[in-house]
Image (tube, rainbow, N blue to C red; front, side, top):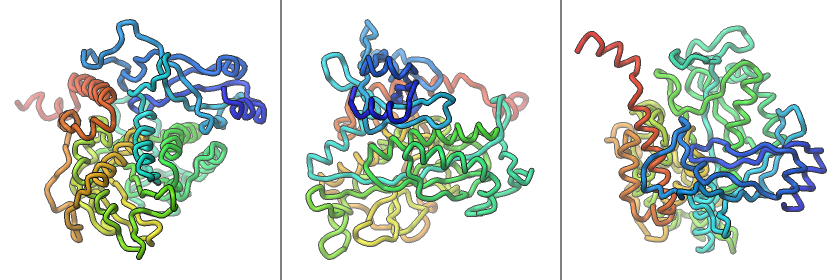
Length: 446
């Protein structure tokens, strides 16, 4: 184990360790152990099948996944940059995110963290570094122990729940100040760098913006923030949910990803030329996003519920149009100076695995840059008035991904096969559920 992790344990009196990895859904999996045992082992093992477990706890039967009949173990190696305290734990506890390898040293290409690392390395080979800044929306809701009941906004300090939407309301945020105080403290303890917190359009819907930085670091922070927000909310008898569309008549929750590319030699933003104007690489990056976003949609909208968010006139994009400071477009170019020129990908849902969503967004832009693609003309009106160009269900999204050879080649064929198998299994499981809508409108009418 790296010396700096041992030193972290000593400095913070750590007695227990959570060794974690993000699975396909972005759920933390792993082991909890005494710090002394972690120090002795210097690594852990888990079955390779951990990356084929669905969100319902099942496993796909698709033979294409080519699982080893022996259910081989993979080796977890701690990333020293990821070690943090678990601020809500009763005992002094650390959490460490791990990368995954086979016994012979090969990377586990199914692992979401590997997929993002592979894209970062492709950029590095061109002399580029990707810079991202995620914005993550989520809802606070009353505890919901029975899944048959619809979600409701929680009661705030005033003793009342929000009667309607309170966009950008400071008073509405203040309703939950005790919870946010805990959340901010938890984030500070974990070096999760929150820039701003605002109230979004939905009832008790919030958004946090993270400071821009290295793509892997920001993916780690989003991964950890989701758990942090849920823990803080539970302390105050609430749920924090990152479902893309938790309530039928409220806007969905997104994970907008601002992205730009830095020249590793000069430190300059390659999206701007020497005169400060948009560069050819900037337009090619947008063009790559436009061309490949539909095929990558299952990575931005990974669940059946994700597509309920992609609805016209409901604060979510329905196509891959782009425009300057146009929030109706799937790709928005915010107002900025040359050094901060960037593209905001507004398509991903808050339910997306941050490693995979960031990897896919950067992969699409990369393909456009290396091929010198040209984008459409920027849209100045409402993109909501134009036709859908994004797939509207997980089945169509996975079909497009399976047919997108350029994306498969850079995301990894083994990963795409495994990911598609997991998501297809989840979809088949969903189809076995009869909804209340079907019982209400079909039971006695058809």
